[in-house]
Length: 162
Image (cartoon, rainbow, N blue to C red):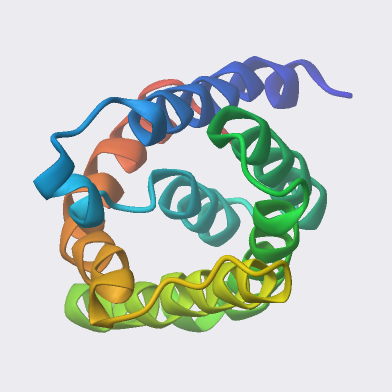
């Protein structure tokens, strides 16, 4: 592995650690359903920005970490984030040239697919959540995308992550 490639790896890893932290940060009960999908957002960003470095394997490990942190059925986030990483890596050339509002719509759809896959696994083990409230995190994630994009892009350029 080259030095420049190893140099930026810590920035990617730290962004995932921060996303894990935000995912388990306590929220008031009334606001719990408004929590964005932080790990999915960070995975989407890095899969769009550096698909050769962040992909399916990263999504799988991030998903397993999220499963352990949240104490849910092992593999539900691993499966969904693996598929999410594949889709984001596959679409990165198209989505990166979209205007910001279209990128946000793409993130809405990608996070929605992520939530759908998680819900399918949960329903297969008997944990069914009903209502439209379940889908709010995909909308909140899409609304936060422009700010997360600006922040992560700043760190990517500042630390020369390539």
